[in-house]
Image (tube, rainbow, N blue to C red; front, top):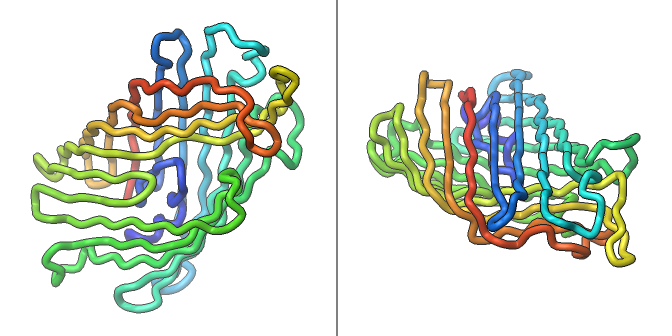
Amino acid sequence: MLCVVVLCFLSQLVNAQLTDLARLEYSFIPKSNSEDQYTRLRALVNYPIKTKEDCYLIIGAEYNRIILNLEDDYPFNTSLLETINIIDLNIGYTFKTSEKWRLGFKFNPRIASTLTSSLTSDDFFINGGAFAINDRTKDESAKKPYRLILGLTYNATTGVPFPLPFVSYYRRINEKWSFSAGVPKSNVKYFFTESSILQTFIGLDGYFAHLQELPSINGKQVENISLSVAVGGLGYEYCFTKHLVAYMYTGYTFRLNNVLRDENKDEVFKLDGVNAFYLRTGIKFKI
């Protein structure tokens, strides 16, 4: 059952845990030496439907509301991009091919836009992927339980016109330690108990969206906005029950790039490139 929801969450920039059925989350990044700040509110839900033995169709949705509080002086009207909406529809299908391996496919249409006027084709993006999963986390014969995911993903917002490889590897070393290596997040966890977990992590975060009301800067027309963040820090999870978990991650970015771009995705104006404090917290319901 663990792999049923894997397909709904594998993406290149937005880091969700593999087994979440529902999640509410808050993220915050203030701009260094400035009153500017970035806030993200996030909600997602996914529902697996059993079609036959060991085969599941997954239907779900995710909503991100990004609020840019731009208080500094800028050479354009900042109200044109103060709120960004990202709406995803998650459609996945997974089935077993052998006792150890499972295949999965994901189709992920997206609206990413300021939504200040009627939708156009520029507000729509298509993402997806195909994955092979070897999950032995519940295998009692495995001395050190692990999960390996190999795949190819396509994301229309990256500007790369072909699928990119995806690799994620998780291993429980013993009752106190585990690690996960991959993208968009890698971590090392220490279990005080099965309900109280501390971790160190590095990960990626960010977004890409279309601006419906287009500012012009130095004679260049702006079409899109993007934020890419690489961050490292500490995280803590507390399990109220086996399925209900509260979490908080805090750290500092070691790469931050917030940019306005033209129709070719070339940089027109950099909103921020200075590393800053990072906070992400929320509650999730998982398998």
